[in-house]
Image 1 (cartoon, rainbow, N blue to C red):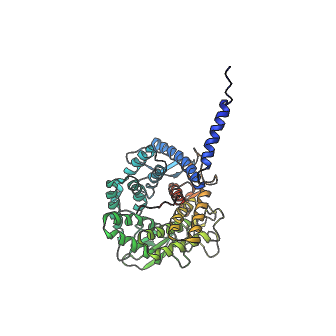
Image 2: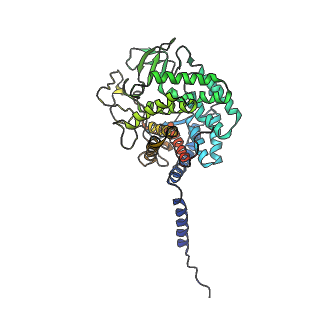
Image 3: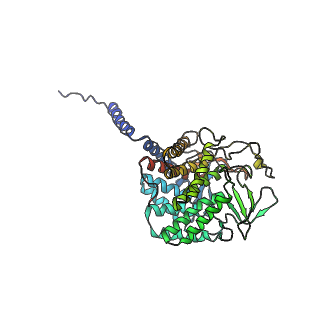
Length: 430
């Protein structure tokens, strides 16, 4: 007589699940955290891909950016400043999973941007081309991508005037005060585009690009960073010299306040500049900027800043004709938090001891907050963007408390950096 098998199907499945769980629990906490977030993010990106293709299919594409009031994805032209972030997020997801289907999509959405290599109408070629083609070249080593990036750097340099010493951001800026129009505005965001120039010099041997990047960074350090390491959003120069003719805000609360995402761009930008130059002035500036952000008395405990650090504080009065600037609702900006977390993880590698530990702990705590239900969206919500609660521009009454494609990009970048640091891997190839 045969003995009955004591392992019933439910019992067997429970034991199998127990084994899998046990194996998963042996992974380091950082690995489990990053894995779960990339698993979720890949699903969201797949849903975004389907949505973008079905609703916004076009030969050159319309690139995901945010959502409308109905919660549906909205897109932007490839000539706006944000198209590089969506393919960049696809590249980061592929880098983690090695999913060939994601690589195919990343290539498709990247290669549609090739015409931008000759674009000269604003300063955002670093965002547009380095977040897309830069990651494509890093992960494929396709020489054609390198050539496209060098040409994009050449186009960006057309906006640099050596008499001024800065790359012009916009062709003009109309003051919120309604009494001035500036023709050589430079915004703090522009620091992020310097990475394209540093890269172009490294791969081409042409030091012109590096010279432009360093000159711009030094000018920003001099004129955009305040003594307390807060930042001006817009510095306006005379069109034929390095004389500053105005310091104002375009997206912050007041001219003398600190717009949160602007501070994040500055932390990231000077940290990156130090990576390429090893100039101690850039490191000192990055550390000062980080200290201002991390220790500000108005930073909430969960480390996700309000859209401006000084909103509603005495001494920071909009005093302009824009009713939008009078908004005092303390909206959070997850995009600023994601950018800063990624930047601090890099910055931690350039210092040591308690300083390095402090940057890492702050960055990881920020990533955990962003990954919590308070900020990470569920599938089939939020236009299938990963993060909720970012702010584009309150003064322009635009993109308020919505997902933003660049918040997702820097969140994924931060996760990859966190994993590499946890494994004692280098963040960048030599």
